[in-house]
Image (cartoon, rainbow, N blue to C red):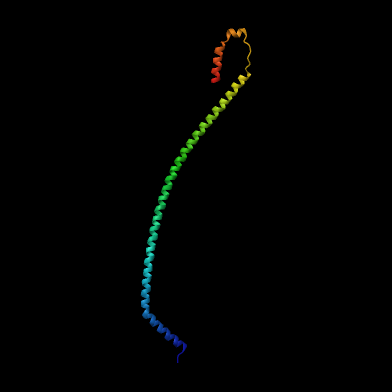
Length: 144
C-alpha cells in the first residue's frame, strides 16, 4: 500500500538521485558563472580604482593650482594695500594743502575787502615807495 510518507520518501529519493546526477553539472555551471561574474567584478573594480586614482591626481593638481593662485592673490592684495595707503597719504596731503590755500585765500580776500583808497599825505609821498613799485609788490604778493 502506498502511503503519503512512502510516496514522499520515494519522490524525495528520486529527486535527490536526479539532483545528484545533474547536481554536478549544475554545480559546475554555477561555479563557472560565479567565476565569470567575479572576473567581471574584478575588471569593474580595477576600472573604478584607476578612475579614482585619476580623480585624486586631478584633485591634487587643482589644489596645487589653487595654492599657487592664492599666493599670487595675496601678493597682489599686499601691493594694492600699499598703493591704497600711498594714495590715501597723498589725498590727505592734498586736502591739507587745499585747506591751507582756502584759508590764505580767505585772508587775502578779507584784506582786499578791508582796503579802502585814501589820498596819500605829503609825508607818505616823500617817504613811501612810488606807485609802480607798490603795484609790483602787490601783484607779486597776490600771485604768491
